Amino acid sequence: MNIKNAPAGTIRAALRYPAFRWLLAALAVSQVGDWLYNLALVVLVYDRTHSALWAGVTTAARVVPVVALGPLGGVLADRFDRRRIMITCDLARMGLMALLAVVAAAGLPIALAPVIAAAATAAAAPYLPCAAAVTPRVVGDADLPGANAARSAVTGAGIVLGPALGGVLLLLGSPAAAFALNAATFGLSALAVLAIRARGDLNPFRPRRAADRPAGLLREVARGAAALRAHPAALRLVGADIMCSTLYGTQTVLLLMVSRRIGLGAQGYGYLFAAIGVGGLLGSALAGRASRSPRSRSVLAAALIAAGLPTLLLAVTRWPAAAIVLTGLTGLGAVLVEILTETSLQRTLDEDVFGRAYGLAFPAAIAGIVVGSVIAPGLAVLLGGSGALVAVGGAVLAYALLVLHRPRRATRAVPAPRPAVADVVAAR
Image (cartoon, rainbow, N blue to C red; front, side):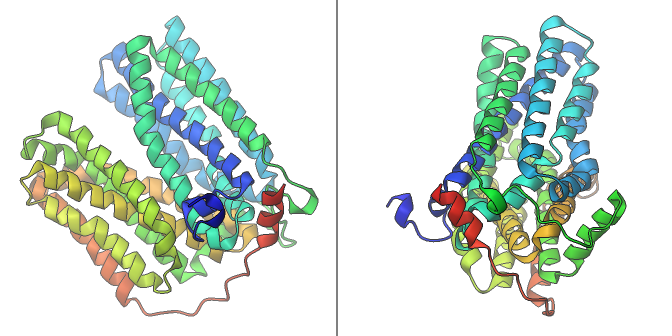
């Protein structure tokens, strides 16, 4: 089966659109570079300082700007030409990575590393809201789940390939080489975005400008929040995504305890996280079929159960193979929830406020990872490692029950898809 006759809603179907292929290529090269650079950054800081605290501060410097500046990125995505924003983000990050390479190669003060890392993350704040807003304009509505699944699969592949490539570069040279390569990936990403062709009013990068656009950053962010509140189904999905992100955050701590308990040691920790990545890729493959189901509540609840129930079972399993399979299932469920959430937001929210709403939803999910990683040690102290897994898995299952039993509320009609943009851009 080739991409021309692939079933609607699948990854292969989404790849029919040349504009989306270029967008996906831009995301792919930058994702691999980002994960490569993350490994090299931690190694550089730890080798220079021999301090776990410094390594933790540097990691936090990469995460905090996403949460703090995500709403601003969403406002920018709704206000300005998204192609220019994405290319500006890429060029800024390319320059910052080149500067980080100089810091590593020239032995400049290591305090510069977390500062540059934070600046690079801040420069990326508008990028993902722009990419998410452009996606439904370069593919047909029926193929939107497949497009989001492809983007999720690219992220999963980046998690696997980036650190592996970074490890090779660290063996062959210094972290400076990894930073220089990451700078090059941002240049390639900018070129891929430039290759997306558009014409006149059908430009997929041009946001629709609302006549009643409020003035001021806080008012525009508030409008994004109001758009989410107006759609209970969207809020339900965002809540599910935050739950799964919090679960992932706890796994960064609790899976180390699981690995030691089942006899895999510290090395097994890597195996368990690799299983999460593999499960996520399987979840991406199932996303198209799941998104086409008319029983959206049941599908969302099933995805949450796929993430929560294996977490409960991890509390009692003693077999390494079983632990790896169960951990993979949590990744499958979490990625399904992520793709269902993104597709629902793209289909439900008005285009003129989508960036601002996404600029709130995405940082909230990232904040869930931070919260999960912070509360996991406390839960482990209070309840033990197994008890903490039961508590976290039980919370996810409780949310699944809430999804199933929450009374239905009427929402306004979903705006009609705009296939003209995708069809014209795909034909060029």
